[in-house]
Every structure is written in C-alpha cells, then in structure tokens.
Amino acid sequence: NAGVTQTPKFQVLKTGQSMTLQCAQDMNHNSMYWYRQDPGMGLRLIYYSASEGTTDKGEVPNGYNVSRLNKREFSLRLESAAPSQTSVYFCASSAGQGNQPQHFGDGTRLSIL
Amino acid sequence: AQKVTQAQTEISVVEKEDVTLDCVYETRDTTYYLFWYKQPPSGELVFLIRRNSFDEQNEISGRYSWNFQKSTSSFNFTITASQVVDSAVYFCALSEVFSSGSARQLTFGSGTQLTVLP
Image (cartoon, helix red, strand yellow):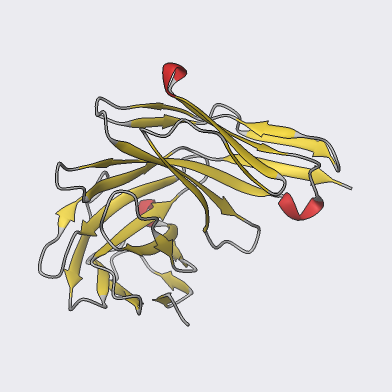
C-alpha cells in the first residue's frame, strides 16, 4: 500500500543543471499537487493538476514546469536550477473534492549549490 | 485571497501538560474546509482532521480535540496530557471549493513547532 511515492529522496545539483522530480500515486486520485517547504513558510503550492490532462499554476510557479503524464504520475521539472530553489519538495494527491484530504509523499530534499 | 495564520511559531511544554495550537483563517467563501496535519521529525505529513464550514461541532479523538469557531475564524487544536511523541510541526490548512465541490487549492499556515519535554 504505497500511497504517494516520490523519487529521488535526496538530490544535490549545481546551479544551471536541470532535473525532474517524479511522483506517482496508487489511490486512483484525480488531483495531484506539488509543494515546496521552506523554513518558517509552511508549504507553498507550485503547480497542481485537478484532473488528468490539466495543470494550473499555484502560488510559486516560476522556474518550474510540470507534466501530468497519466492519472498516476505527476512530474516536476527544474529547467535551470537556482540556489533559491533549494527546498524540500512534496507531492500530494487527493480525490479532488474540497472535503477530501491530500495525501503526501515523503518529500524530496533538494540542494542547489 | 485565502490566508491561514498560525501565530505560534514554537511552543515548548513539559510532558502531561495540555497545549493548544492556534489557527486563524481568512476566506471570502461560505463553503470551505479546514484541516490539521502533523509533520513529525521524520518529515512526512500526516492528515489529522477535516472540518467543513457548516459544522461547528467540536470534535474529540483520544487526547486530541478541535474547536472550530466561525465567528472568530479560528480552528484551534488541543492536545491533552501531551507526550514526547507529540513533538512535531503542526500545520493548519484551508481548502476553498468551486461550486461543483471540487477543491481549488490547499493553503497552509506556516506551522507551529511543538516540543514536548520529558
């Protein structure tokens, strides 16, 4: 019973490098989300996908792109990493209705030097 | 725009004390949902409770209780007889919804770090 699986768990990049964070859920959820967590700021929404085939910007989308590959998978790409993107990234999924809680992956700790 | 404020950045208590974590929210919608999540030192986010805007009944689950007051836009969380294992960061979050009932997005507060000392 995996829930939401994120890969990798840790990553160190150099400024300017690109990478893709992977997220997959096995709960047949419609909606998926990417957040970043920085000290003292809680979680901030980067992008979300309300359903397969749709994506929308959240609060802090600059410097990121996303792909909803299918119902299960939602990836986050950093095209040219910057030190300001050093953070812990969480993927989440939910059934999509407002009363449904979001279920989170274990996070990816990303450091950009 | 919706906003969630957790004014208590850090709280420290001694084991067996009761502790209340405050959450104040802002929204223009009449239909919304409030959540509490726990983030233990291991880092994962654990869903604790959900409350809709039409249900102001307080809820108790074991040592946990929640007090939702629409008049003050608050959704406070109390841990009774705290234990060391309660040490974690606790997040309050708000979800607004479209008329269809589907969620817009979840807005989190900045979290309260609770430390329970033995």
